[in-house]
Image (cartoon, rainbow, N blue to C red; front, side):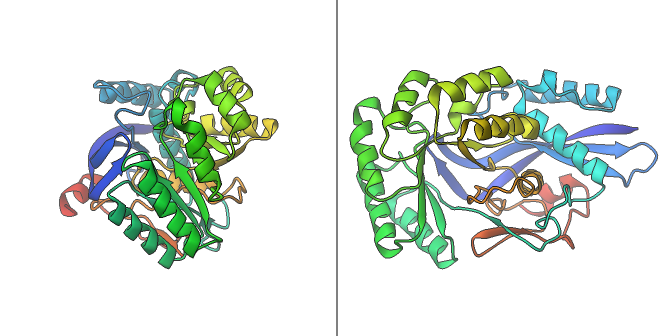
Length: 354
C-alpha cells in the first residue's frame, strides 16, 4: 500500500526562453510522490508539468484536479486511465510515478539507454530571440556536434529567419534542419514561404498554420513542397477514434508526440500505433519538463526503436533542476545508471539551488 504526496515546485530558467507564445522565465510543476506505508524509503516520483496557454488540462483549479486524482489513485492503488484522458499532464505524471515506484529505480525500462551503453539521437534547439542570439545558438550547437537542428520561427521576421537557415545550410550542407512555426503562418503567405524553405532542403515544418483547420491542413499536407509535422493539432484529441479521424483526414507526413500534452505515455502509444498503421512518421519530444519528467520520456522513448533524432532536451534550461544523470554528449542524450540521483527532499532543491 502507498500514500500520495503532491509537491508544487517552480522551475526557474537560466535565461528567458522565447517561444511564439511569449517568453518563459518560470515553469510551475507538481511532483507526485508515492510512498510505501511500510517502507518509507520505497518511493516513486512523477512530474506533472502543464504549460499555461497550451495544455488542454491547465486552469486555475489544476492543483485541485490533481489532488482529486491522487486521492483516487491512493484509494484504488492502481491507475484508471479512462477518466484521465482529458488530463494528459496529470496522466503522464501519475504513469511516471507508478513506473518509478514499481521499478524501485530510475532505470524505468530495460534498454541499452537505461544501462548507459547507448545514447538517444536528438536535435539541437534554437530558441527564439533576436537574429544575433539565434545565430550564436546555431554556432554553439554545430560546434558541439549536432547533426540535426530545429529552429523555432515566426517571431523575428521570416526574411531574417530564412537568411539564418541559408547561412547554416551553406556552411553545413549535411546538417538536418527542422523548423517549427507554432501555427504562425497565415494562409495567404503559405505557398511562397514553404517554397523558400523547401529550396533549403528543410526536413520538415511543424504546425505551419494554427490548429483546428483540418481541411486546410489536409490540403496543405497533400500539396506542400516539404513534409508537414503536426504538434499542437494533436492537443485535446483524447479518444482513439478521434485520433484516427484526425490522422485519416489530414494525412500529415509526421506527428510529434509530447506525453505531457498528447495523452501521457499510454495516449502517445495509441498515436504511434495509428501512425504506423497509416504510414505516418513520428518522433518524441519533451515539453519543458525538468529532469524527472524528461527521464520518464527518455526511458520510454529508448524502447521504441525510432531512428530519427528525437526532441529530448536535458533540463539544463533550469537553474534549480533536480539531479538526474541525463547528459548530452555530441548529438545524443545519455543516461548514467550510477547517478547522481535526488538525495534529499524535493523541496530542498528549489531553495538550495536558486
